[in-house]
Length: 318
Ligand code: BYC
Image 1 (cartoon, rainbow, N blue to C red):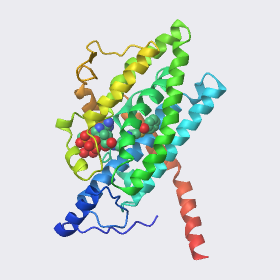
Image 2: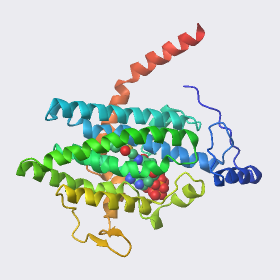
Image 3: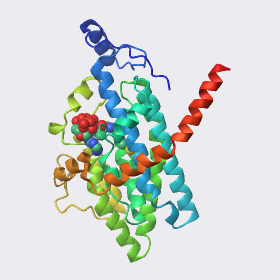
Image 4: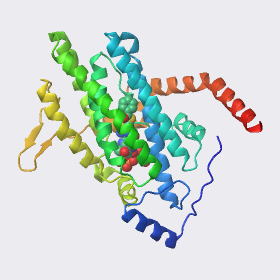
């Protein structure tokens, strides 16, 4: 695919001031408009990481397609996984508008230069994990993405609007699955609690490190790419999810959890940050497997890309 010409110049205080004024006025920035190089770099990093997460995130759920307990659950799961692939496509497309070709973004992922969400490096061990992913992982993603729908970059913001609508369905089907398990046998209830125990902390880690350790937040907020901090978003997720767990009889795996009546927020134990940093450095339980599968699928799909390119170039000549 043809790479868009990069329009920015590295430093230009006058253009930068005009750019910042546009951001303060709540204007969206569009692909061919001038933007500071750091704005482009931060967006490319974050959006490509987001695209990779959507696509890698298909793997833990796909693990259960052949074992879904009913035709209805299988159809729902297939539709959800297909949606995640579509989200990856919108996001790669949006990222390309910043001037980096998708093949380069994928190369960065395969070389370990680009990240994807830590949460997808955990295994799906029982059927209730599919419920926990929809309810907790998509639930965390929605909190983050509802904020990103107001981001300053037009193509990212528009992709988020559509993605959030689909994530709403994903979240709902996950919670519905957990409700069904909690209404089931003692064994099914134990499976649901086991899934809750294993996915709660990784879901909280999705929001990234504490604000004081978040190297990118200040610049991202200055450029109105991110409008709220990691800790603020994480707190919103905690506050809305705990009552949902309690109402269906699930226990949050945190002995120190308490509700602070004065602040109106739940307080949790601190997250195991050693675990988080290990996972994002490639040492989580499934990092190797996820990358191996992605690289293999990419290589096996080479002929499709070649055929599509040959067709496109022939079509251009006609
Ligand atoms: N995992 O300065 P910080 C989905 C990295 S998928 C891995 O706070 P930032 C779904 C961070 O990149 C939806 N790495 O970063 C799909 C940085 O390293 P670099 C996924 C993480 O950017 C299928 C360093 O740690 N959502 O819904 O300010 C099935 C310091 O962090 C993580 C998105 O991708 C992490 N969790 O904030 C089901 C949302 N956290 O890059 C569901 C878009 C941090 O400097 N992304 N790091 O080397 C974001 O909103 C932000 O990038 C983050 C991090 C909140 C993730």
